[in-house]
Length: 474
Image 1: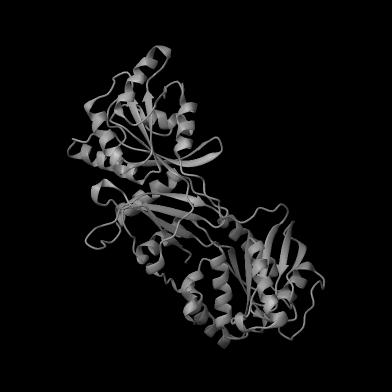
Image 2: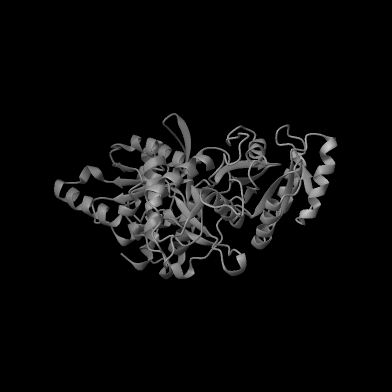
């Protein structure tokens, strides 16, 4: 196998691994104990999910929630009460709140306007200034116009305009959220597959002469595409609407992908280029493999190209009707050795010539698309992450153990998860996380994209911000 099979082999290049990961912006809700942070969180997310009790210290861990305002999505992180002079458990809670502030794009600083500015509020303000994050000041417990004057006193904290709100009654929450959106970084364009109406789109791909056109004709029940034993008969990407399993699908038959396409000339070169374009338009790729011959480097490259494109994947092993026991034995060994990294892809053993088991393609395709579309809520993901890290912490790197502050699913199609960390997570640990994601949540038939956003505290209290190129493996 060539050096270009890195995706299937799990190889990453840490030297050039810094890249921006598409992820929802983060808003950290901080403040001293019992100022109403969790009540405000419940008000923003529109449901009673954060635990609220009129006792200081109910919230201890960072808890992340999905939130939306005016069509803008963001991750809201609730934190425990922040006391800079605390010790023991309270100090650990405060440290979690400080981590959240360093990680956030915007800090929502909650102060009890009825109490006024306390020494603890001023101490928190000093730490917030050191993070150099935008701060939106929420003057909570302003239940009516009579308390507006209390909110004005909070100008003296020196972090900008105080927004009077009542987490209990919802008063002023709209103006507060408008200010939060104003402080958020500009929304980056989402690198997602262009939406198209109509049937789901399937690309039939594989190296030349593995039976793609024969399979399409078999599925359609008639000869719609030219079939010939000469490799490379199909040169255009052909779209065909086919009724299967009670629904309509759009199949894109493609020219065979050749390994060394830079050396191709004329029609073959353009056929290969059109194949790439067809894959871009598809949502799921059915890769045909000829079991009558040993798996070739071209086969591996085709599978690798699907994984790199982020499309759902089904492996269809064609010409199964001509397979004898000896060839089957060696084929299984080839699959384990060369396709082990895409063990998550559904396998269907078919014969395009006889029609054997071609009906099993539809459930395999539906499984891949369902996984491709799957989204895990931020709350559920972080509960799962907390248990996982508690049982198996990240390995120490450079004398320090990196912490996973929290995670979020940045996108679907394919599922893309971003982990906010205080340091670099080793490749083996990231593979472990992805393996456990698949064990506990499925994702059969879909690549899973896993990225890190490293925000490691440096000298002077300033946090560095960066992200690591996503892994597209397993």
